[in-house]
Each structure stands twice: as structure tokens, then as C-alpha cells.
Image (cartoon, rainbow, N blue to C red; front, side):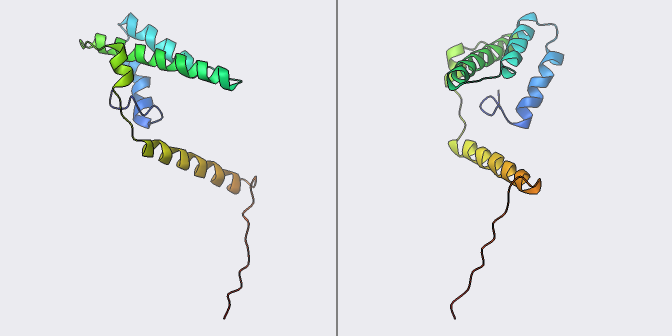
Length: 124
């Protein structure tokens, strides 16, 4: 639950990868887990299709959280799982900048992008 608003976080992905091991006897959790994973692999070819995939992914993710809660004896309302989460916009902005900087640096180092240099003459 700690990383539910940070789906790109390493801890979040690591926790997802442990679900099948930790809850292998709970059919409801495993079904929800596999359904969610299938949404993560869905390709999109248009903005409209992307919106549909995101909606399905979110719905599937919250179903997984709901089933995980039930499996450990907690009772959550699905609407609360969707609405009661917080992640600062600044974190999302920082992640976006880091991804863009990494992409640009990779392009520069691989020779796909040039690094412009301008000579500047100082007035004396």
C-alpha cells in the first residue's frame, strides 16, 4: 500500500513481483494479479486507446489492492482505494525530468544527438 501512488518506484515493482510467491494459495489474488499484469503489457496505438488502457489498468490495479486487502483480513472500499492516495505533483515532475535527462544523455553518448558549442567573446 505504501507505494500504490508510485507505480514506477523500484519498491513497487519489487512488491508486485512477490505477489505470486506470497499469495500463491489465494486464487482471488492471483487472478487479480494476472489481470493487472496483462494490462501492463497492453500496447496502444492511439491516444483514445491509451485512455482506455489506463482506465482498465487503474480498475484492475484497484481490484488487485482490494483482493490483497481481503487476503490479509482487511476490509477496504474499492472507491476509497482509488480516492485516498497521495503523491506530490513535484515527485511526478522530478521523475519526468529525470527520465527526459536520461534519454537525452543516452542520445548524446550514443551519437544520436549533437552537443552544440558556441564561442563567446567577452567585452573588455
